[in-house]
Length: 262
Image (tube, rainbow, N blue to C red; front, top):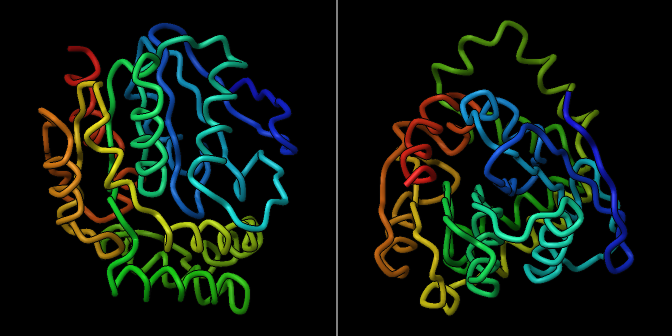
């Protein structure tokens, strides 16, 4: 069972999960997720690691009433969790919106990040399709959470994965009851404003970019753009959808491990 810790950071109560022993690794979740939902399946595939999974504003263990979120505020919460856990230097992996957080964190704190992994990430949410999607997410999160839950399942997971679920309506119901929908809305509105294009050249950590080849939420081309903007970054492909990290965590870990061990 994970050790759960809390700290106060700039008016927020920030929570994180702390597991294992070994080389420090910080995992940063995506929009609408949290450290448990996005990464629980990954942990068994990363032995020999002390893994920190902070929840940032709008998700999970963290209580932060801030109405307009910024990348810098969420970075501050991730760094505060690392400080609280006693991490000086650490490997860092971010997923989706967490990839943007990890990108800027690595640019701002190059002396703290040893190796970087960016999964299903994007440089900017400013293109027309992303704007359409994230505005729709924010609207549905406040107006019709059940519809958004269904949309996220349909666009986030593969046909094969969803076809194996026995009671999909129970899954939808659990999502509606268990999610912080106002938090999802605020995070989606942040997605609209994400732009880490000026951060890429400042990254010094060896970087692995993992794109999802069949992603319906984030254009797979975004991973190519990320990798091309970071000096000497490696690009590899997950043969799955945006939420392949949750569908096939072992396959994702298999791509991560050689980079983190180098």
